[in-house]
Amino acid sequence: MAVDRAPAPCRIGDCAEVAKNTTPSLITRLGIAAIAMILLGYPGEIAAADSSTRTICGILSTLPFRYILFVLFVELGKSLDRQTEQVRKIVNGLRFMILAKPLFGLFILAIALIKTQDEKSSVSETASSASSKICS
Image (cartoon, rainbow, N blue to C red; front, top):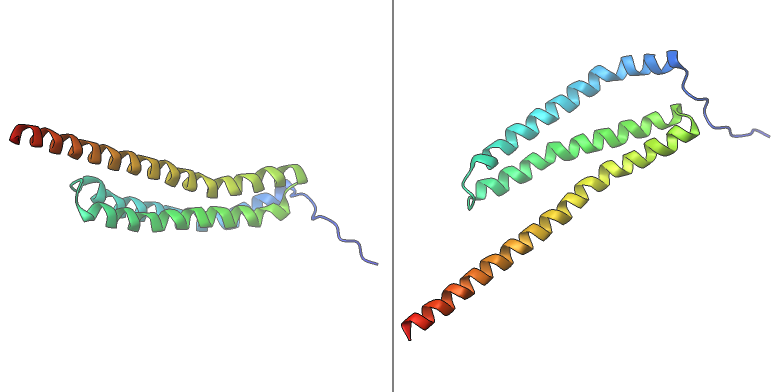
């Protein structure tokens, strides 16, 4: 009867060889995605506040950002079988924190949008009530 054992922890020489083989590819992929994210997002940053360019650029710059998150999540997942149990738990937790962080950012963005809409509606209500008092 064969007993399933956890993979042996990564020995320093083995880890260095794996890192040497994967690092150039990761740097290239993540670097290109980061540059794309900046280039796609910058026109939206300098566009007028009420311009649809901001929205389009924001959506487009999110695509390379999601790719970066995906690559980090997958590559950290691939490294788990070379880690000790304690490190494996920590790295696995970090993988899911990578995914949770942008979701928290969306939550903050939604709150900011709701507040902005509330402020706009209260300003227009105040303006309309002031104009009705002046006109009567």
